[in-house]
Length: 376
Length: 101
Image (cartoon, rainbow over all chains, first blue to last red; front, side):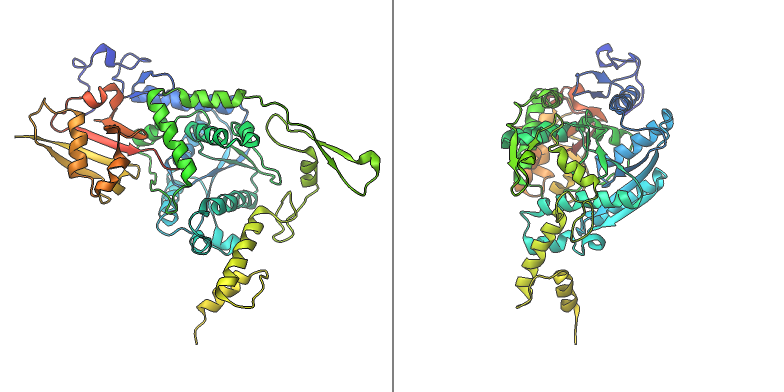
């Protein structure tokens, strides 16, 4: 099928960059028709430019690639390896995977990551929910139901990635979020009226309060279609099965809407990101927090929302002071970290279901499970 | 009568065809008469295992947005999309881009 039948190829079917080879794809961004080689070149160069423009890396940085075995993270690992060598970034790249404990999904995708480890010659670290929280997603879902699975999984994964990176002595995690994902998030926040999230949803580098680890998205401007094509043409080894616990309905609908819009106007994905980036929301009313019982001169603490959406410098300072979760001891901006809060709720639930008169103490779930496994 | 083409379901799309990724499909029309439109209809009739899954593949009489179509490894947008005239031995690749990466 790739035999070069030069006579047959019409001029209009040629690559619009090299004018020599037959075009194989049409770029959604600008409708340009490109041949395979020019596509690779353009695809990689655009990502390089994004990295350079956003100053994502410095020489000698150790960077963890959040690797799920899916198309986005597999292409990310491949492209970063290529660019690191081509442009001498001087990066030390590591694959970091999270094992949520989802049978029939994550076990298979982790097998892909393990192959990637060999293919890309990168060390691999796998952090499992079981080791970290003593819960697997399968257990959480059987306890809390399928509807809230993404909420739990999201919070737990965020911390798991942080902890995995910290364990490796890394303070930068790159993820395979692409332009479609970003446009989808902008759209969702818009539809929900979630203005606080809307403002920061287009940031290429994010850092959540209470986390010393920054995250970035080198694929911010990269279309999903091109990622899939790149993986396909380069015959990259990736895993594609939907998570057993389907995504939340609202996100799914937003995604379909976006795909339908894209089929009519492919540039709309880039346009939504552009709009998101340039969106300036009316400044929030300054919150005046009156702290009681303190002297009157210090009663006003002004919390202004910064351009990147982060709030309250006070919090950050608190974090720098090394505020830690009282339960697990991990860095947190609150007394109890979000993961511990969710898990505490779960454990209470589990205790109620299975053992009477057992107040929810730390490790109730662990105890329950140990008891379950006992046999006489 | 008729001729054969190859149909591939990738990116997780094989869920609609009993997890079979590659199919050899006999087109019961003369070469030169059948277009991708006919192929889509044929796929819904003979490859998709459960009729309930047809909307996973089709929307408004064409391939659902979010499914990438390649004809002999070339973007179908360069080949006339639904109007492309099938030739014997053609390979049609349908890749879902809809799930997470």
